[in-house]
Picture 1: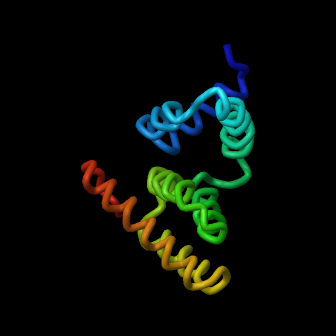
Picture 2: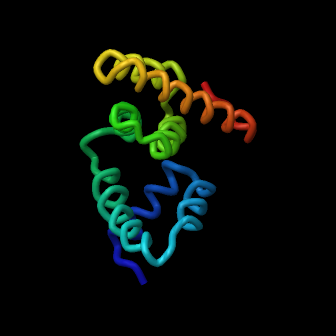
Length: 131
């Protein structure tokens, strides 16, 4: 049985990313990666994302900006989807990407726009309304 912080992290991650993404994450794990997943579940999702200091929507927009700047394509897809689940609009995500374009560079912006377009298309195909 996992500790309380781990269980809190699982709950928070599921709420933000959705049950489908949660299952996909778990399906990707093996003996090598599972300890890393448990660590991030506890401290990223159980500790950081569960803090009261910032609303989830704000945390999502910060993550979109950072992951754009770091060119973390797969994590960016995950967190754009999480941003939508946390109430962010396409327009808000676009503004964050524009901000990153100036401060992190236009090539970074273009890649992030392509990633966002993929997520929006996938969400629409899944029947979800994206504002």
